[in-house]
Image (cartoon, rainbow, N blue to C red; front, side):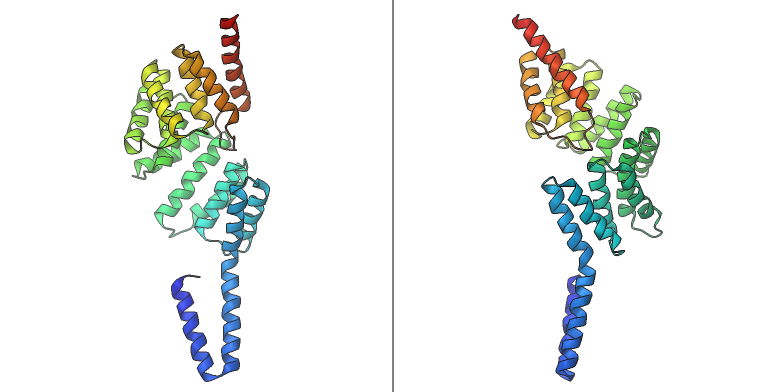
Length: 274
């Protein structure tokens, strides 16, 4: 309930009390009941967010689901639920939440675009990469810009092995847009790495791991860059830090890939010592 609604309710209660004490009490009870009724989805979402922050993923999904099942959840709350579902590996469920939002007629463009942006990640998780790129590129072409969509589209293009020069141009544009974003920096370091420009890749990678010390992809790609530059001490240092990084449903490198790279660094250093 917003402030204006609260003030109106208080005014009505005051007027009711002036007419009759019992009428005032009755109106107050009704107002409190309506307030609780309206606040319930938010209450559930707050609990869901708290659970998500402490890593209790099951409880987070349960609370957000309860919020949506009230039938009174707003678009922002539903988008948050979709985000939690994505982060915890439930892409199909996230799609079921997002599709109805996107179909709403008259919805503010920024809210619809946010839902479409999240659905691009759903498509990616479902293996529908071409559809993800098509939707993301369409939003970009229509002038929709933010750090998340820059980072997402850059990563998708790298994943699909699109023209490297064009992808690098996009990732450089993204870096100019926001040089502090971790995904944007990671994408650009990968572009330079693939082009064989290892020093440039290292510069961006160093910025990334320095500012984001628990980013799986940052350390993973940093190890690859360090190995190309024969900096195996640095690679070993990053490997130790990579072991401690927390994974999520949105992590883009698999546990198998991580373990394989760490073992490669370990084998090289053991052979060198031997």
